[in-house]
Image (tube, rainbow, N blue to C red; front, top):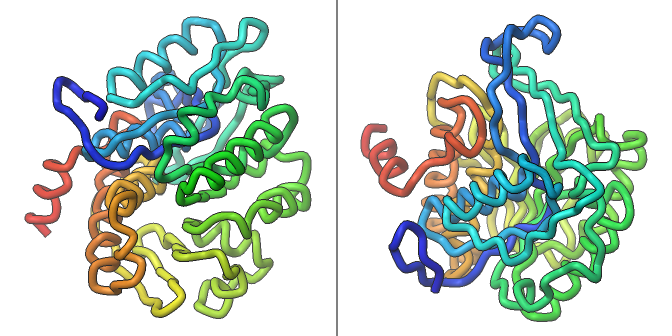
Length: 329
């Protein structure tokens, strides 16, 4: 069991692997980075967001990655701890800084990115630095694709996946495409797909589906072109239109919730965190369409709530917030 604010947690451990960084978000929406009068400092990084989302919803989570041995790195490690996420898998690099990202919020709440990682500490995690005991204890092992971009982190990512799988973990993959970080779109597509057939749960956005398939038609045929035999659940999130789901036995759509979006940062991570929190101890959801639809409605609510505040981590909801939101819908 793990404790969060004095409350004991039970259930399977969800381990998130990858990057944690600091987003600098303009204080005013709808402006370019150059026009922004100031910036708010917001902790982020998709795998870390998922770990905190799980913990906020009462799940048991840990983060595996590398931070700079600097004030920002120790601040981020502290934020994980404050949110009940195990930091046993965190390493600190004395020679590289914690990654920074400047994120522009456009008028519609969507984002543009400028990254500072040359290299950042998260890129320098080596296979030898992995906490294998922690990874072997995971019931779900969740990851993205940013850790595949360069060595040595790519080798660390592949080893961690292999160790988790051998220990019986469910592998969960959200590519979280960030094209500005890749040498080319072709390299991004190739590397993202290089580990595709290992994952048992995959979440992609509609934009990522377009990118990976080269097809601008978001339909069942397009989604199912990404299906592979090891896959148990494929999800395509559709922003304010909800999400499509695909399993071996059924597929369908769950609608979204109408909210006033302020910042979409972290909405997908909130959705994934909710999904994994419920899935970790009950895989029967993948065989029962009614239960899966109920879970996805809960997950969509988490994503919707997250868009109503600036920054990812500050906006991730608690269970009580989600139930209050759902009761009002």
